[in-house]
Every structure is written in C-alpha cells, then in structure tokens.
Image (cartoon, rainbow, N blue to C red):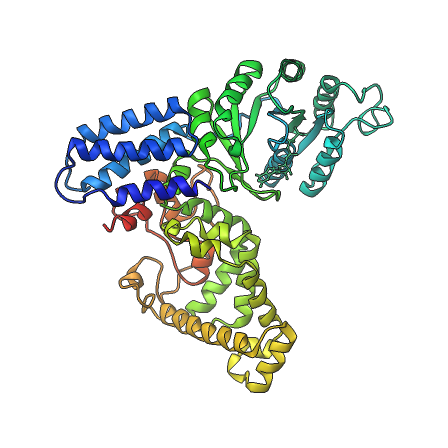
Length: 527
Ligand SMILES: Nc1nc2c(ncn2[C@@H]2O[C@H](COP(=O)(O)OP(=O)(O)OP(=O)(O)O)[C@@H](O)[C@H]2O)c(=O)[nH]1
C-alpha cells in the first residue's frame, strides 16, 4: 500500500537539513520532489497542485521553533496536509433515527461492492447491529449467488430474488429482473423483520454509462438511503477522479470506500477522491477476506504513507483478536515470577494468527518502509512451521523445554516435518525470549532498551486488580491508556497491545508529557 510513494517521500525528507534554516531553494527542491512523487503515484493533477502549493507556502512562512528542526517542520506540514486531502476528520456511518438505516453501495463493475457488502455486514454485526443484505445486482449472473456466499460467511441473512420468480426468500410478487423492486422489497422486509441496517448491493458496469447511473438513481429514489457509499478500486489510477465525479453527479454519494488498498498500486485514488468530491472516505478494503476491512482514518493513513506506522489500527485489531482475560492471566502469571512456557507461546501465537496476516501487521509498525525488502520476503509459512514444532511436543516438554534431549528433538523434528536444526533454533530463540521475559517481569527493563523498565506499567510491580480490557468506555473514549492519550492528542500512540500487556508491558501514562510528533516520526527523524 503506497509503497513507492512512501519510499519517495521518506527519501526526500532524509535529504533535508536538520540544522539552520531552509532556504527558498531548499524548499522548492523538496516541493518539486514531492510533486513528482505524487504525480507518479497517480494523484490527480489538481490535487497535487493544491497540495504542493500549500506545503510550499507553509514551509516558507514556518517559524523556526525550538521544538522542531527544519526537516521535522517540513514533515509535520506534509503530514498535516496529507491528512487534510484525505478528508481531515474521520466520521462513522450515519445511522437512521428510525431504523432501518439504509446503506446503498454504488461503483463500477469489479470495484469490490459485493465483497464490501459482506465486510460491512460482518463489521456491523460484530458491533451488535442486525444487518440484512439485499441483492439488487441483477446484472451479473453470478452476483446474487456471490452475495449469498458472502452473507453466509458473515453470518448475515441475504434478501435475494428467487430464481423461480417466486420473489425473494419466499416472498411473492418480486420480479427477478427488476433491481429497483428488489431493493424496495428488501428494505420493507428489513423493516418488518426488525433488521436495523440494510445494505443494498447494486450492479456495476465496465465504464460509466447513462443506464448504470439511471438504475442507481432509481434504486436511490426507491429506498431513500441514509448513506450511499461509492466503492472505488484504489488501483484504477488517474481514472479515479473522472469516475468519482461521474458517480457524484449521477447518484450523489455520501461517502467513499477504497477497495484493494492491499495491492502495490500507486494509490492515487485514495489521495484524490476525497478532495475532488468533497465526500469523506469511510472505509478501506484491504484484501479478499471478510476481515480485510478497516475504518478509514485520514491521520492514520497519512502516518502510514510517511512510514510513521499505524499503531492505533494495530492496537484495535489486536483488541479484536485477543482475549482480554487470557491476556490478563498471562500478565499476572509473568508478574508473579512464573516462567513463560512454550504452552503460553502457543496460545500467543494462536491469538496473533487471529489478527490476520503477519506481514500486514508488521507493515503497520513505524519505520517498516525501510525494511520493506525483509518484509516482502517474510514467509507467513514460518509461523506454521513454528506452530507445528511446538504442537509436536508433549505438554511436559512445552512446560519444561530443558527435558528436550537429543532423541526428543529428533522425534519432534520428525513429527513436525522439519530438521533437528530447526527445532534447535526454535528452542534457542525461545530460551532467549524466556530470559528476556523474566528480566522484564523482575523490573529490569527490556534488554537493549534502556529506561523501559521505568515506563509506567513495566517491570515487576504487579498491577493492582484486573485491568479492564481495552474497550471504549461510556464516553466513547478508549479504556487503553496509550490509546486514550493518543486520542486526546490526535496522535498515534506508542505500542501497548494486549500482547504487550500479556508480557507485563503497559503503555504511556495519562500524565506523560504531550508528544509533539507521532513517535514513529520522532524515531525516523532521530529526535
Ligand atoms: N485484493 C483485493 N481484492 C478484492 C478486494 N475487494 C474485492 N476484491 C476482489 O475483486 C473482485 C471483484 O469484487 P466484487 O466484490 O465482486 O466486485 P463488485 O463491485 O461487486 O463487481 P460487480 O458485481 O461486477 O459490479 C473479486 O475477485 C474480489 O475478491 C480487496 O480489497 N483486495
């Protein structure tokens, strides 16, 4: 995602001086590089012009402040302007006062609407809503079946016209051939069956055409949606703007969903659409699986583009995947001085797996752009191999790896289909990690990371009482201290994942000094 743009921008900033003042020539040279990088990433020309104009103006008039050196000042400006073109503030879905909330999806063929319908439905269901999917894409022969499959995976019912022309889900009088009638009947069904959200999947076409727009507009008029989400493939490059404008005029959408953000596309659509249409990007689709779905936050996306990581999204995904009680039990166990065992490691690994692709997760850490090659070469199967090795051990061996002698190692290797060297390496690495964990739980801090032992929540002091799982409180603020501080400051928080807490690591405390720049950026600029 934005790999090339990210590399180009970060290498531009690296060349900036960190002392003295930037001359006009320095700023012009930097702005030129930024312009090229954005154009090469397929960002719309009008957006690039506006963006670079503002950055130049602000960089020229920036006061030299004691807190930031000139390079940091430019990065800060670019970061803020990126957030602005990505839409500034993020907003959630507009939910109807009188349910059901009607959400209509629109976009070109293959944009990812049907897939998105399933992802959104799952996401809403997980939040306690009771969505109903409506198959109003009757253009493509397989679209209804596809939505049914997606609905089944998401655990969400689908209202679809009956192929036998008996109507949808046994209802009579619904023609298979009329998407407007199906959409209207779908909303009525949702109302009568008390679904609080209806998601209407509509047909796409290869290109923008009058029929497509008319059909979308007719469905809109028949169902009066609370949200019309325009789904756009982030890989379509410069066509994004014309397509978005056509849909904005044709159906007047209220929000954008970027799909296929996982591709190594240049990603220009992401950076152009919100600005050009004036409508916010609400969600991002980042893969083919139902869980490859994110709420879009302009500030976090800007942070990723500038290789400053996206630790908040990482934390949220961890919160979803991790069992808070299990994590707390682990923290308690370590704080009481007990060893972290291979059985614990297995549990941790399973929870990590629930978070999805390791590569994607690692990519959200600050500075990972500089390790892209290593990341690209990261073999997800390595995790499978490690798990297979641990699973081939007996419970006794997992509790006490010291008993694993030569013959046991050979047996484990055979059982897991690896070599004895692989088993040896894993045991060595594990012994090192176990030692580190012990040191941390005694308050010695993390080896090689001076001062971390003094961080709040770190070290051997047992936290009093059970820590509440990192969920939002009644005011909608995060229960996670690091996240709460970040929310208050509008910044990306330092690492404090449930895995972290499982290892006895807390996060930033509430009374910590305010950060001026996201931690990733500070690290990147060597502050
Ligand atoms: N890599 C990737 N593939 C995606 C993503 N979203 C959708 N796809 C794939 O893109 C293809 C088209 O997605 P659909 O959801 O069928 O698109 P659609 O907009 O409903 O298409 P029509 O019904 O023909 O209008 C499918 O193969 C999906 O698996 C994504 O975020 N990342």
